[in-house]
Image (cartoon, rainbow over all chains, first blue to last red; front, side):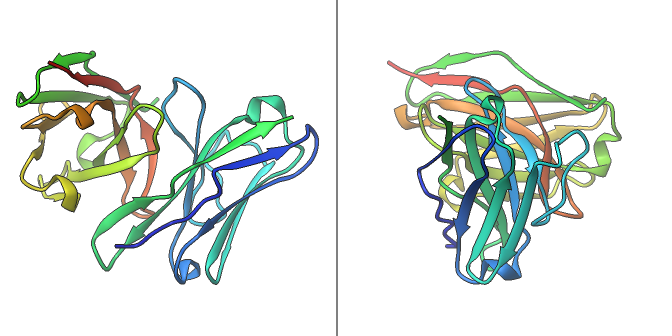
Length: 108
Length: 119
């Protein structure tokens, strides 16, 4: 089955840029979605179809996808961005949705 | 506004079954699918399966085939997920999520239901 690989943790100072990667075989050919999950809360969609933002999500959140790596970029990081972030794709070969293992973003 | 409201926490013994509900509002229920996702304590998200609210077609995660059944009741705009033969490693928070079929993303989520399996 298709595997998505994320770094377990990323740390960044307030005001800086955080980049969270999601690796997968030829992931650039798939649509990648990103979710933010704060402790005790349900996940929230922050980027869909590689780089689109749902209404209400700040422009500071952006995404890209090429080759074997998709990236969620959070600009001008704020303390409130501290959360777990998950990438997700649809794997057409197995007809299954797949999540990455998640990345904990720490704001220093 | 779109809302998915799930049923309350459950405690079950090993070998029992659990049925979690997810009541949708704020949109046309039959125009979107519903997926179920679970999260064991301290772990990541695990996709469990999907059901079309339009025609009831289902697609289950291979790992759960034979133990899970997803259904909908269009008269009440409610989706259900039943998991049978519960084991301790089924202890998790279970989420329902609306699926945007055009993109495949999960655009709205329920608040989660904690299912604890313990003897």
